[in-house]
Length: 395
Image (cartoon, rainbow, N blue to C red; front, top):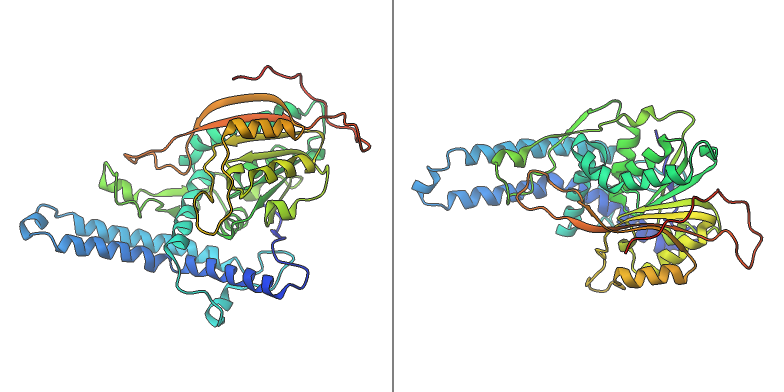
């Protein structure tokens, strides 16, 4: 079981405008979750309306279509029961913040309305994250995206050369927390960091409120009306979690921290390892991410990364975004002082992919391991973990 989420995103300097923005954003996310049932049912209603617009003889050719839509509505009801549990447990989920309550949403005059399609897409994506991070169906994706990172951590910090509990690992962009959980389960001290409240609400629920394996059932694909080989694929159930998070050893050190990576993590030379999976492209300025990772790593510490470069703010109005190719990013990484120890420029992986869909996206990811040099020309250098021999890197 994870420790309570530490909230670092709320301004602590008396900035009333900032606090109000945080409060409104909290309410907006709660509102999006609560609007899920209405929003998805509206899509079903449009499908039903389209069916009734068909000529009568065409309708007669589709005797199972309306019953299928009713099955989707039943699945929506099931999903909404999970969402209600997620929302229920958001009250007081932050250990050092008591200013938010989901029950305040109905009473707040500043409650943001209406909910946008963008917000509802976030809710749908969050539900699919349960598949990726906490179901048997998502194991293949996790093996591809998390497996290399976990194996590399074990290789760089083997139990016969170090006390694992003394090795601190940070996982920015932790999502629903599975990668950070697995690292902590191996005995390392691990902290996940996440900015999205959608992800934080869901991760808090799965990590702290699931009593046993496969307690819950979701229907994550019901909004996908296209590219179904079988109509039944759209209402295919997925059970979670595939492991019981509560069975994390009592000696394990695992925590989640809410907030912006650049704002929360500023302490120099704090971490032995930073592990990033599908993270660096979430930046407005990826150079700032690289710079900060270098700053917070101890001398001799490792940055292990796997992911694509699907820049999240690319071409969004009023959003600053710098989009760089990997060749430029690689040069900047070395210019900032990192040494490449391992590099695999072509690692195929998927992200919240429906394995039964007729349309599938595959990312050609980059996997690399970098080290912050042990010996520097300034500052007193603390003793760092022993480093394996450098490998010739692939090109």
